[in-house]
Image (cartoon, rainbow over all chains, first blue to last red; front, side, top):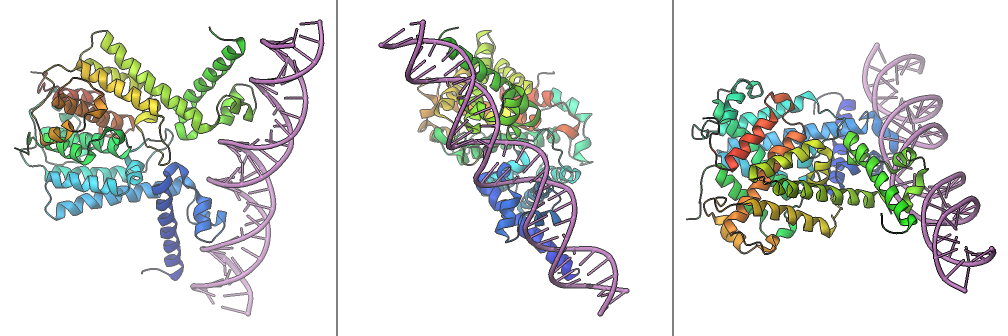
Length: 215
Length: 215
DNA sequence: GATGATGGTGATAGCTTCTAACTAGCGTGG
DNA sequence: CCACGCTAGTTAGAAGCTATCACCATCATC
């Protein structure tokens, strides 16, 4: 809405490019993303896209940034509606299942040479802060040897007042949910018969120290 | 050693191709694997490789198979030397850290169209069986609602006599260790300061119900 | 209205996978 | 022993990709 018509057109084309890029990624993965194909879909030919994105990597970087932003927003939105930690976990799973390749763009196989831009780590710690905010005093767990080590490496919490044991707990929240979720999204449970959503819920219950929600 | 000289030469070239492929994957990831580059390294030009591998996908499939086989062997070898569950976990981590891209070839971002060959699921359940074999009666955890669901979907255990609660426990072993391990290998802990190996050990301790190994 | 920034074009280089046609040579059956 | 056949290798080429370059049109502003 703001800016000169030139600028508005420019951002609109950029958005449309990213739109098509997401479509391609959803059906064939990020490695199959083709600038040529996107250009053809937009009715313009090949090199025109380089006016809007300097390279394929630059476009993908932009998409990674947007994916991070989208995940952080989904978590914050869940928190805003009064969701507890279980609610945050399910919001995260919903966001991931909605577009698995978008999840893998963040948490999938890294390309050895590639370095994510700095602001993604900012967003990443924003997500972490959302989890920490939702943690009550109950989320601590008994002190472990790792907690002592973690006490000396609290930098990543960016001054969040949560006790170190809670930081450890939040790390477990992240790693465990990512473990079950990424295996589900990658299809590793496909031929095994059980319902991945139930395994996710069970893992979450164990994490929240609710040993048996059924009885 | 067996077979005609022709066959021996053929398998030797195939092995050499895979060797170079692993080198390329280790430094640039599987997506950057180039048959042309491999052929050039072997001193032959381009299309000659298609005598040995029908396509790029076929080569990658072969590599995935070998990676699965290698992981299963590493786990079985650890078990053969009397390793307990913690030993299995550390064997798995060693194997992964040794060549992260090899780990990601198995557990990383899946290409939407691609379907892994059937024998990989066989090897996968062999790995699962190794874990189940190392489980004592202690590894069960309290019965959960998920265990009831899992009771009706035991097919993937392929007749292993372990009780259902132990199957659930083995799933947690898999998902939790994969969670912390894959995030480490992907570099998501890079800027956070703490030692990923210690987080892995801590997560393993919690999994094995050893709340505080330090005190 | 002239001028300069901007958007788009086709041509081109260099890379990729993969197919097709063809040749050199090894190994075995007659 | 020799001829045939299979195999491994070659070059050429199609189709695709990223990315750069040179050029042209068009729009916005002075």
